[in-house]
Structure formats: C-alpha cells, structure tokens
Length: 196
Image (cartoon, rainbow, N blue to C red; front, top):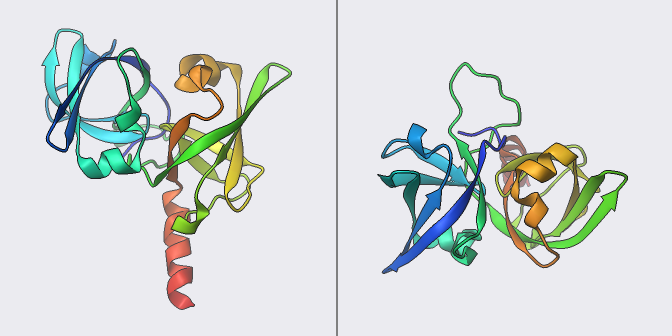
C-alpha cells in the first residue's frame, strides 16, 4: 500500500527485455535504503526490487503490467516518480493507493494559471472506471484531487511544489500516464453494478 506522496525522482539507467518480462534499472537517492524483495511504486506501478548495485536497483515488470501501464514506454534517462510502501501507523498524507494501475490516460491540455498548473487527461471510460468531482485519483503515482470530472476526462490542479518534485514538470501534451482510480470508489461502483 502507498499514499501517492512521491519520495524521490529516479532515473532509468538500463532496460532489458527477457521473454515477456521487462527489467528496469533505476538510479535513485533512496537505493541505499532499499532491500531485495521490497515493493516500490514506479509512476504508480508497484514493482518488486530484484537486484541492488550501489546507487542503482532493478525491478521486473511482467507482460500484464506492461500492457496496463506506461512502463513499457520508459526509455534510458526517463524520470520516474518513486514511493516506498507506507509504514503502518504513519500519517496517510495522500490517499490509499494500491500500486495497481487500472489503465492509462493521455494528457490533452496543460495550462499555467497564476503560478500553478492544470493538467487535463482523457481516458477510455468504456472500461468502467469513473472519477468524481473532488475525489481522489492517482496519476503516475501522485495522489491528486479531481477537478472538472467528465465521463472520459478529468483535470488536476498542480501546485508549484508538486510540479517541481514529481514528473509533472516533464509532461507534454500526448504523453501517456498511469491511472489508479480511488479504491473505495471502485468498490462502491462494483456494488452498484451488481444491484442493477
């Protein structure tokens, strides 16, 4: 479980394809605090540390993860939002995030508004995921509040701190991002669908 509060920005240093798996090596300032078999969120995708070498560590993504997320689009030098699993008993500063990407979305608009930014994303609503106004959403692992919720799109407002300390500063129109919809909302929607 995660909170969606980004701890560090990692840099992809190596990508290796093996059968249907993708091994991604990341250079990060938190590497010295990691251990083999530890879960770390990478742009919102929970992946297990499988190797550590000095200030770099490696994780492996399986085919299902590659198909449902933007992990397969990473390249050498890409910046990745990183968060270690939350500690039981610590403050929950973001919201409950599982690290299980539901689907990807495309960035369709970036507006600078008096020192902050508004990012708009379109997603395929036929999959059944929904947003609600002022509800929680995770975009590339970042816990955010939904504004301008529509059937297949939503926006998020980004303060300067979040912009500078996450991958949002590198987003361009057309970029694919990972979405994890609010887990409580997903359960409520599932229960409502079962009643109909």
